[in-house]
Length: 101
Image 1: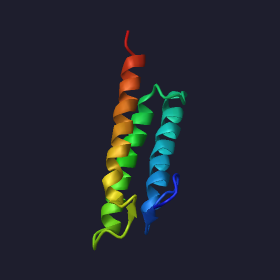
Image 2: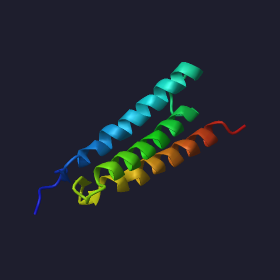
Image 3: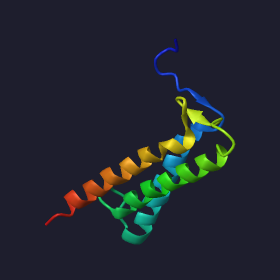
């Protein structure tokens, strides 16, 4: 039995967090460059999380093409694209709610 709070990964499974943050950083920087606003109410956050989903899926499938050696909590790396996609959907909901007339 593992102690509570221990992150369990094998191979490059720990890349889920950095890839999620990388896409988010690209989205926030892009939003600030084009809009001048860095809060969650812009479409840049949605694009950043969508980019994260694509990065996690593509890199995970590439790393695990010969088996499932790269896992996070015993799930393959590429299966965590849904986490970034869910964040994109939530950010889109926030953008729509804030921009309603």
